[in-house]
Length: 118
Image 1 (tube, rainbow, N blue to C red):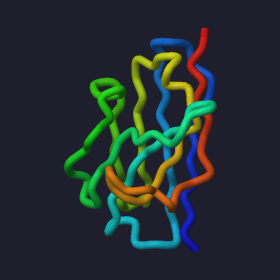
Image 2: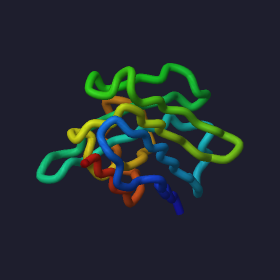
Image 3: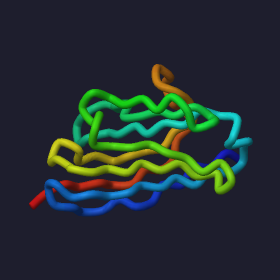
Image 4: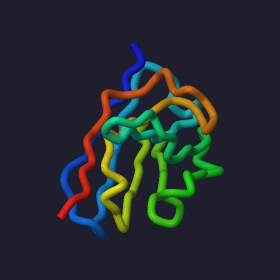
């Protein structure tokens, strides 16, 4: 069974940082691109960042470029999202998902809440 389990969300003040982690199981993690997507209250799913299976070609949405960094550890079947300089508009449920930018991301975890507020 394919499983993706996110962790690391929470409440942070504007300008703060969080690191999200996503542990994968049930499929050959090192053969798949991975992504982070998010869903803000009342809005649709928004792609945030993707990374190829070998860790190359990180790509980011314009809204997070320069502030977020995606990485992965294939030995641990884990993908990360380091989020710096957080803004209130980054508030959302963050999901890790199997696949690369442009996909529909049908395989994703249960999500972790990130709230940026003073």
